Length: 347
Image (cartoon, rainbow, N blue to C red; front, top):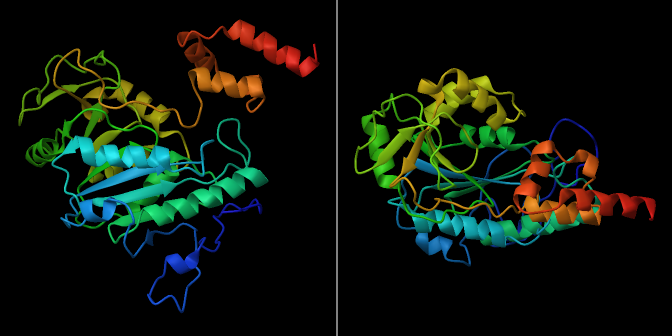
């Protein structure tokens, strides 16, 4: 992962603590060096945590859970990821316990105004994070995909979909710092997708109390299999359920390999809401959100303000939207700007 070459391809490096993760021999006498380039890792062995017992009761391939991760300031800790994974198995009712779990790991940025850059300290923390990740998550149902440098969500999601089992029809796209916080009827969603494959392609989940704007006057799936589903004129890359075919046939052909999927798809939905607009899952009009954002990247609100004041982020690189978000969190951005400027000038 320590890629300083500037090449466009991911660098192949040795897996940390390789003797713990063997391919082939299992007696520890012939460890193999495993590449962290663009390939899938099917990790043998047993987890020391609860995932092994929880995930060993079913071998269903119908649904996959893809959890997208990238370097964050709290690494090498994996606590944020563990909380999110645990929420998947807590709140997705009816999810087959041996569903494929794919964890994508984006690398450090070559040059960035948003993510963590390639510094010696960040590389050290990232290597320790990978060691902890492999130690905690293991089993034939687990696939870990590591990118040698920062490629972005779209790139990593495409890689994950490419290695899905041939029988996988549905996927959950989950961000590593967005744990679920309210029960979702996974079994009913899958049943509805089977019965209405031309209608139910993607399902969003509200993270606010207000339901997004409706797409059209009538919801064909408003009350099916005990679900309330509203077609909406919005699109988000935050946690959602989708058919694999929708991603392969409809979404991926529209977006650049390393472009911002969310930005592109929002424009697509505005032009063709009836086809590309997701259904929004809800049980009432004013219920609590289905997930919450931990902001492990520290890109918003108070966390971003603290990074700006420490000098970790240049105020010139902060977007207008992020300044607005800080103000919504009650931060006096004018005073923040003055403090930063005074620190820079020594005033």
